[in-house]
Length: 237
Image 1 (tube, rainbow, N blue to C red):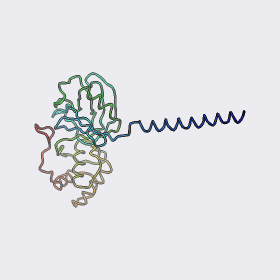
Image 2 (cartoon, helix red, strand yellow):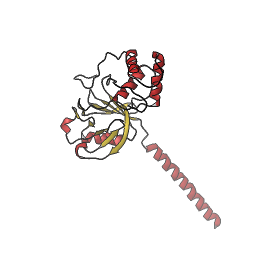
Image 3 (cartoon, one colour):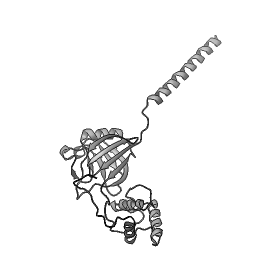
């Protein structure tokens, strides 16, 4: 009797292991594989491009900021997702712009999508923003492209400074090949290190502070000193 019970228990245990193994295999085989999702927004084209694993998945029209309330440009990421309403449509995704509250959201004014009509955010048709919302997660990269240079740097910049002019500083440092970090708009230690490297190249005091003298030399070095900043234009890039 004991042998019979032991045999039954052994068979049950083997069966449970087999079922569990098959279930785990099925879960792994049929679970969606992790994908590298990325959003690219072109301000001149007024379009949002959604990529997965470097493949263009969807393209949507967006409303961008008006010239007096410009949309930010740079390299950011999604920091918040929420289901809102009213003027923000059915979905909201905040972007990690450090100098203000900017996001991708729906709208109750669909006729403005595809135009320069917002206070800096990116408006989408509600049906489109719901698709994007379902496919992205927190920390999804958001690259916002525009005409270059982005702006003129008109102040000294140092550690912890934020702004569109910091994005421009980061862009210039990249052109000078002394910085490889993101165009985040935040003056970090990595940016300071890039400024110091350039100051050594330019024969300036290597303080790490981007004085106006430093940025002027940087614009000359990268052949950007005679270019006029642009935001919107009638043509495409």
